[in-house]
Image (cartoon, rainbow, N blue to C red; front, side, top):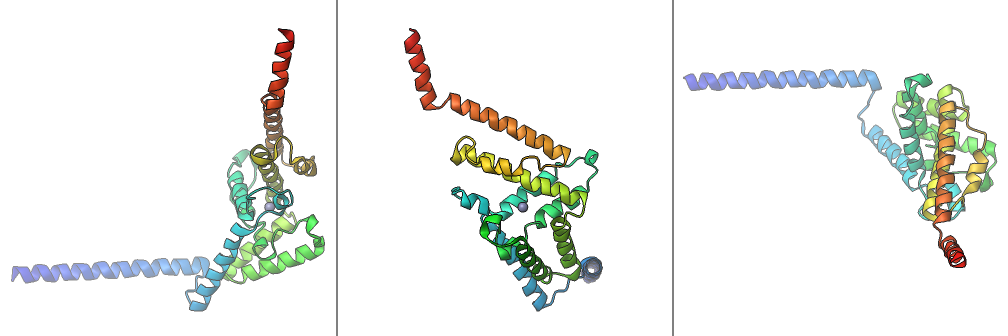
Length: 249
Ligand code: ZN
């Protein structure tokens, strides 16, 4: 008798636990629904997967500037955007910028390239045409996700494209800085001292934000020091030094 009462108690406790869990699940589902309007229909799931796969293509789009300069195993567009997003995390409150917005702009600014590729002035596509292609690509991408998210993605892209805000202008500086930092790294790994000078020339005097300007200055110092050190240590230089030692002895 006691046993069956305990079993009944246990059953009713489990039932109420299950009911409670169901309530929680539906409450969180409602919350999600109101926040992001997630729709779990099969069509929408297919669209979401298509969106994610298209964005994944960015991992396989090499940056044209490096390909043109015959850099071995050049980075992809998503590599470039990832580091810009991390750079945006270095924003401090003193900079009076919306840090999260900068991170988002960094992650979205080249997203259209998963469809149109990395078009540069050397690709022979006029600027107007490039803009139209990228706009159409962003519309396609935005149409694959919920209305709210799609609107956000498109607006972030437009904000950067038209340089509408301080955040967009800051991220433009990051775009150029990330490129020259990468150029310096390729010089050290593959191209030799100042072997990718054209990237430094093309961005000269274009940095607007004081923080990024100070990073550029720091990079120039490091690059010059590293060029001097490697010149001093180069075999031809060592031979010269030895010759001098022999001459003087
Ligand atoms: Zn970029």
